[in-house]
Length: 249
Ligand code: NAD
Image (cartoon, rainbow, N blue to C red):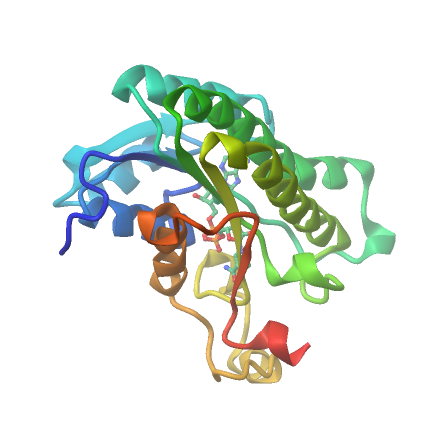
């Protein structure tokens, strides 16, 4: 494996499984030190162990994003341990397929806390650290749902992810003069716990032009590109990684 990220340090939120785990793996394989984050100490310890033979490059981070300010604390904790932060991936997220008419204020707030507010506070902390370093990259994991109606997830999830895209662009604009790049990746459907409920018939019914769901590693590669110097002139961009669904409309 190449040493693209040798001596670089990254935080990937929600990296105990799914897309976050695959992104962490991609960075670890290329020499990075990675903050592995989840909700419980046990879950994080299991995820770090599962990153063998790279577990020595993992730094465990625990925070429950139902309290979004804990995302800023997490960034400070990591930097106190390793000394700098080259990149942040705001990946933790999720939601339920709830009809809008049944949505409660509490569900709305929970979805926003996890998918948007925690990302905002982590990004604000990272931005301030990266300014003093003179460089950095932030990648926000949005969703196809951000770019149109929330057809498969609730309106709360779609609205929070649309907010994340908007945050990406505003922060990219403000931070560019400090050599900090901010981009988003919008996955379509990926084989993770979030999509485990889809039956074979439902998968066919999605009409994905490439004919299948993505593997988590197929999201990790584009995220790695946006974190690397290979994308040194890319900022404020939203990369659709969805097998052609966005094109199809
Ligand atoms: P997943 O459910 O497999 O993993 C979610 C991760 O977020 C886990 O590590 C979990 O510990 C963490 N997390 C969840 N709630 C948390 C909380 N309250 N506090 C702290 N951490 C919490 O999900 P995934 O499919 O890998 O999704 C990763 C990201 O990609 C999410 O932001 C999701 O919205 C987005 N996404 C996924 C798909 C898909 O098809 N799987 C499609 C589009 C976007």
